[in-house]
Length: 267
Ligand code: OAD
Image (tube, rainbow, N blue to C red; front, side):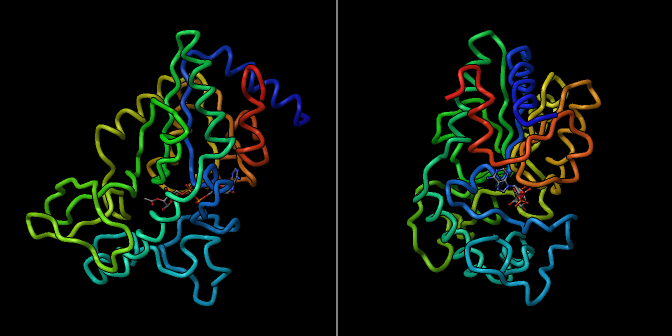
């Protein structure tokens, strides 16, 4: 199928579907200047150990310089809270500097188009950068939390107003250290958020997976749940992923270029 025919077909499906679930990953924010996590050749969930010597240029892939378990786990935080804090502070400052791109904006428009015919779009995002919110999307499920709010390590007390640029985690009123309000490796996702994501996958007629390597569970299973329930599956990515063989249409390319073309009135 040519690119044009595939785009037209997906646009038509989107216009016909009352319930649409969208799963986004780091790829949708790449065009805003936020580095993705994995190199394109990452094919399987690793033990989260980075091969030594695999250091590409800084800022290109987020896990390049570190073992993810050191930066994104409870044990990593316990071992070196300053390092973990500084890594998240760097990312926080980065995402606050950048702007939502054409891909984020197209999803806002898509949600409106679907709502205008009394349908519902649920945007399930693995991203912790809040760019979907800043673009204006409304029905968002942040399955991995976000890096712009905080909770304390011992009791989960919530905090939002924390200075940027600190070299070490500040202390909560209960004397525990503050940590980013994200889901780390080995931690469970928020049950209500995960239940809502599963339910939207189960009930949708069309599932759109955008800019995710489809390697991290449980988010990676959502498209398969949708497919088992009879939904059409569409993927937008620069490259093939473990999901690609199972989709109805694979739209190869950047989210910022492809998503605006899926709208009823393409920009
Ligand atoms: P990854 O870094 O694993 O994958 C990014 C995907 O986006 C890859 O498949 C790229 O090919 C694709 N991509 C890159 N640029 C793109 C573009 N402009 N348009 C379309 N696709 C593009 O990121 P995720 O799948 O989001 O979890 O990673 C999942 C989770 O792994 C993250 O949420 C994070 C990490 O562990 C936590 O931090 C809890």
